[in-house]
Length: 296
Image (tube, rainbow, N blue to C red):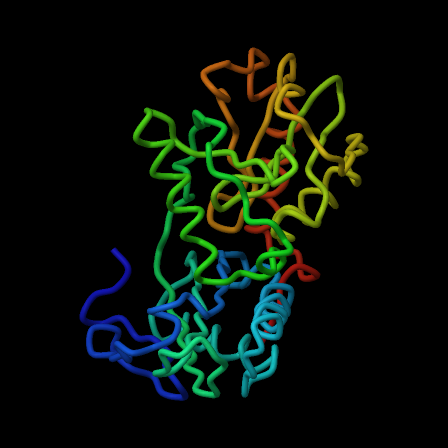
């Protein structure tokens, strides 16, 4: 699914076949989850393959690394250049790009200076499948921000996401919606959350959620479309009587939600602000609006 015998990845300064690349089984990231990563998309546009908001993504990668006390030998511009070279080497246009920063061999619970950098790319359709999804409120909570940096994409944090997703799927749902430690809605297992109620878009504020780049894009588009939007804490009971809801994320893009805890939203998806934002977003990423892309 992710690579074949011809797939090329970037690994520690070299271009290697993914099928032949090697990692260290004693990596601190493998054993303890001390690593960071990003999820980025490129799109085929009238000007060729363009990476959407590459600079924003790599700034967040740098921030994540800093939060985990990982020093990187590359700049944001270096990462962007490597990503375009990666796409070219693999003849990809519509692609998902995964930079991964993982630590070297070190099994003590102390910092280590060994750092590895991998960048891979593959064709990955919209993560939640393109259809409105059935969601359950998970029994798992998002980690308390006093326990681990929530504003960073840390590899180990996603064990929480896997548990929540497995729980949801085992009960017949497509995705999980997690609460924060105070009982407010936080986000999905890998997506930010928006609720449409009484003509207003609501979305949880920063603090207990990942500052999603697609989330920020949607907020910007909503304001330009004159859609009322408020960043506010949302209680689960506020979902009752809402018109619609949707997830946002680089992998999921904008994914409509059909139901939460088996209670369906009755407003047709095509009549919602979420659907208008979905259409606007798709047009934006495929028509090469230069302010969103870092051109080379």
